[in-house]
Length: 578
Image (tube, rainbow, N blue to C red; front, side, top):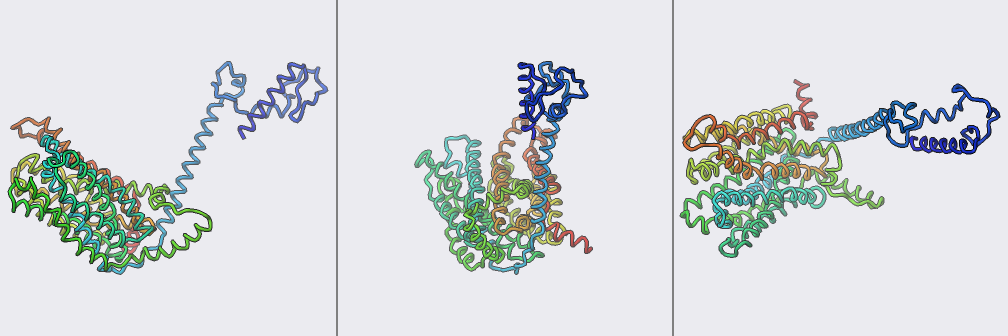
C-alpha cells in the first residue's frame, strides 16, 4: 500500500509540474480535465479533495528530518520518522508473537502426546545396556587413567607440564567426535536400523581402535606419525561413545514402566561407572605387578588388550535383546509416511535437521545441554582429574595411593547412583531431586578442594566421598530425565538424547582436564612457597569455582528453561491427588 501511495504521489507531482510549465489549471485525479474556474483563486477550503488526501497519506520518497528545509513536505508531515518506527516496531512485534504462538502450539502437541504404554521392564534390554556401558566406558577410561604414561611415550620432547596437557588434548579430540557420533547413531537408531542394531555397531566400532591403540608404535619408533595415529584412533573411540550411552538409555527406559524409569536409568549409569571401576582396577593391578620403568616402556598397553576378552561376551548379550516396542510401533507409521512422501515427491530429512528445525525443540535441546553441563564437568573433575591433581600436580600422595582412593570412591559412587535413581522415582517431579543435587554440588566441590589442604589421607577420601554423594543425586535420575524429555516422538528420541548428552559432555566434560590444569598452573603463579593462609586456599580452589559456575547454569536451566513432560503429566497429578 505504501508503494502504491508513493507512486500516486509521484504521478501527482509530475502532473503539477506539467501544469505549471503549460499554465494549465490543476486537474482531477482521473485525468487532465480543465477546470472552468481557472481564473478564480481557490481557497484552501476548496482545494481538490483527492489531491489533498493523496498529500496526507503519502510517505516521502526518502527519510528526512521534519525540520529539513530541503524537504517540501516537512511542514505537513511532522511525524514521518515516528510513523516509520511505529510500523517497523509493529512488524517486529507481529513476527515475535507469531514465533511465540508457534512454540506454544508445539508445546501443546509435545506435552499432550500419548504416554509410552509398552514398558514391561524387560531384563535383556537392561542387561544389554549395562554390558555395553561397562565395555564401552572401560575402553574409553583406560586412556585417561594412563595419560601420564601415554604422554611420556608419544610426547617425549615436551616438558612434564606440556606432556600432560598434550595428553589431555588427545583426550579432548575424542570428545569432539562425540556429537558427530550422536548424529550418526541417532539417525541409525531413530530412522534406519533401530536401537538394538545401533548398540551392536557402536560396540564393533570401539573394539578395533582400542586394540590398535595397544599395538601403536611410540614417538621414538616412528616419530611424529605416532601422535597423529593416536589422535585418529582416539577420535574413532569418541565416535562410538557418542551413540552407545544414549542408545543404552533409550532402549532400557523405553522398555521400563513409568514408576521404575529412574532406577533402571541409574543402573545404566552405574554400569558406565562400572567401566571406570574395571579400568581403574586393571590399571592399578598392572602398575602393582610391574616396575615403573616397565610401565612407562610397554606395560601401559596391557589394559587396552583386555578389551578383546570382553567383546565376545558383550556381543552375545546384545544379540538376545529385543527391539524397543515403542520404536517398532513407530516403524509402522513410518511406512505410511514413506508412501505419502513418494506420492508428494518429498524426501525424508535427517533426524538431526528435524530436531533443529523446531524452535521449541531447539529450546529444549539448549536447556538440556545447560542442565547437563554441571554433571558432565563434575564427573570428569572427580574421577579423572582429581587423582592426577593429587599425585602429579600437587604430589600430596603417591600415584598408586591416588588410584586406590579413586577406586574406593568410584565403587561407593555406584551404590550412591542406585540410591539416587530410586529416590528420583519417589519425587512428584523428575526435576526436584536434580535441583537439590545441583545446589549441593555448588558448595561440595569447593569443600573438596579445601579438604585437600588437610594433609590427611583419610581427609582426602572423605572429601571425594561427600562430593560423589551429591553428584549421584543428580546423576542417578538424569537418564530417565533425558529420555522422557524426548519420548513424545520415538523417531527423534535417540537423536535428542544423544545430541544433548554428547554436546554437553564435549563442551564441559572433554575440556574439563584442560581447563582445570590451566587454572591450576595459573593459580600457582599467585601462590608463594611456604605460605599457608586464606589467600593460598582461595587460589587452590579456582578449579572448584569453575564447577560452581556450571552449577549455577544448570540450576537456571532447570528452573526457567526446561518444562519436563514428566513434571506436567505425572507430577501435577501426584500433587493434586495428595
